Amino acid sequence: MIDDAKKKKFDLIITKEISRFARNTLDSIGYTRELKLMGIGVIFMNDNINTLDPDSELRLTIMSSIAQEESRKTSERVKWGQRRMMEQGVVFGRDMLGYDVRGGKLYINEKGAETVRLIYHKFLNEGKGTHVIAKELYEAGIKTSTYMNDWSYTVILRILKNEKYCGDLIQQKTYTPDYLSHSKKYNKGEVEFVTIRNHHEPIISREIFEATQRELKRRKNLHGAKNGFANRYALSGKIICGVCGSSFIHRTKISKNGNKNECWVCVQSHKYGREHINKNNEKVGCSNGSIKEKDIRSILQQIISSALTDQNGITDSVIATVSETMNFKSNKNNNTYFENEIKKVENKMQRLLDLYLSEDIGASDYRKTYDRLKSEHKNLLQNLQKEKVHGTIPEDNEKILYDIKNYVDLIITGKNWDETFYRNIVKKIIINRNREIDIYLNLIPYKFTSKILCGKSEINKYIRNNEIVSNQVTSEPISVSVPLSSGSGIVKR
Image 1 (cartoon, rainbow, N blue to C red):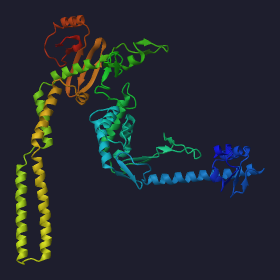
Image 2: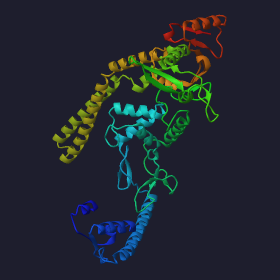
Image 3: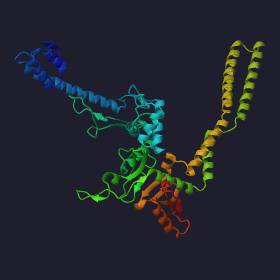
Image 4: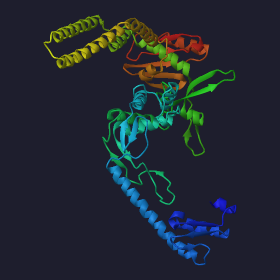
């Protein structure tokens, strides 16, 4: 309207009352002054004010102040009413992933709820980070609550932190400090939250939600981890610098010939370079060098191959568990049972017809009994069909078991690298000076020490120094690993 006034598209503005023009005194005075300078007047019909009159500004100021105060009171009444409704459990907000909001209540949307459960499972049980989860959901074509493929780590993080998924409701997370500007701000304690526990049906259990919050906190406290999304890689947060105590972070470099080189580097070394005293007289940096990703993988695969001595037993145990889960039971007995039951029902239907034709029962009794037997016959036929379909699956199941067995064999013999397996089996890795590495595994009560050797002369020297060591196995077995790039093997003691 002001732009049109500047273009001289009108000469007069007529409005019903001041509150319709502006509820802010400063806005009312400011805009009417600006319009008056352009020769355009504003007439307020109910208040009998024409801004072109000499005394209009005084009366306008008084009436605008009244309108502003009324606006403030209205805002306070609305806030009070909304808060009382919140305390009664009325939900304010839009639909979200896993829940639909109808009539101020939350109802589970099962399709979205499956995605929510999958996200918590990937984060808590599989140990994956938010970047990885977002990428996997996007690649799988799973939709977000907006039904668009816009997954990101921030979306995953909000889902993992949202208390609604365990049945709680926290409202008043935002508030409006200024009723004039109506701008919202995040509530950081300025306004009391409205919290209701066990408000609605949860999608995940409270135990899983609380465990997730602890894991988020743990990852956030890791050196080099930001906003709780560590574990982007299998070894994220597990590699510790033995010199300065910081975490190692993953870095990827692309060489001039296009090759991708992945490595792990101490966060202190990455930020500040080699250890030195800065201008604030503080000791920063670290002298520990980087470790190639392929060398770490090679060492771990060699250790797993030697540590898991009962490899056949492990494979058999996995296959037994999978077989039990898939429930490989012969269903020939089930087929026979359903076939016999169907014959019994068919005989009953024939006898029923004989009774009706001989006029021993009436039409009403015949129809009622016939409908019941027909329904029973239909259900038995459906169950028999299901059993016959399942009977064709065992060959496929055998193929599935065979593939699983081969895959497990490749992992536990150290021939294959599996992100999930190594994320769960590795407890921590300490990178000491001179590229000596201490490795601790979950469920295996040993410390494994490896050394990455560079250069043929260093390898020969290390082997000579270890020729005098006894081959007796101790409580802390030591394996000296030499990267494949060095063209050497492994020395163990």
